[in-house]
Amino acid sequence: MSTQTLALVIGLVSQLLFSSRIVLQWVQSERARRVLVPVLFWKVSLLSSFLMILYGMLRHDPVILGAQLLSYGIYIRNLQLLGEWRKLSRWFRGAAYGFPLALLSWFASGTSHVNLGRLLHPAIPGGWLLLGAVGQAVFLLRFVYQWLYSERRGTSVLPLGFWVVSLAGSLLILFYAVLRLDYVLLLGNVFGTVVYARNILLLRREQQQAA
Image (cartoon, rainbow, N blue to C red):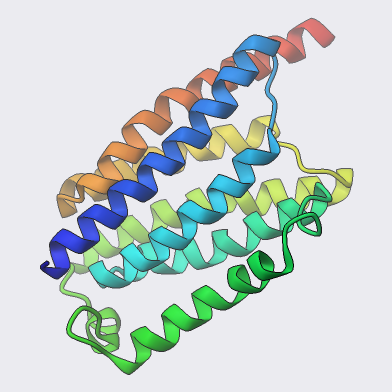
């Protein structure tokens, strides 16, 4: 199997998982008529992010790899805030900490599929790389914002600002995906923009009712 095919398969599986968590959150929120954050959302996010780290390595895309490594840590922290991290088996927690480090070590050693030199000198035009970096930075800031907001509240929540920043970042990444012909990013973000917009409407309605 070629590296491109392997990357595509892993990326599509990851985006399928990412989409499933969004559907889960969306359906539960629609039923409750307010924005909810099920614990499974963060568990699926963690697994999806692990696959996207591998995808970013195979694509030699520093934008994807950097963003997913940071997101991965934030997903773990949200599970800790919810008190769910300790409920997971010791083996799972050990693997969750160890797998990204093992992947990066494998990446640094270099194989026929991945090469550190290609990551440090990607064959991506500078303008495209800047657009992708800005998009991923904005997209990542949603979780930094959500993390700080949740730390203040003492529990994991997804405030209005999270969805607004998600929508803005997703649109920027869509442009990057079109330029890169990255079908994995395209599929994931087209669907995501719809859900982000819907959650904004739900939260605005909830705030108006509470006022």
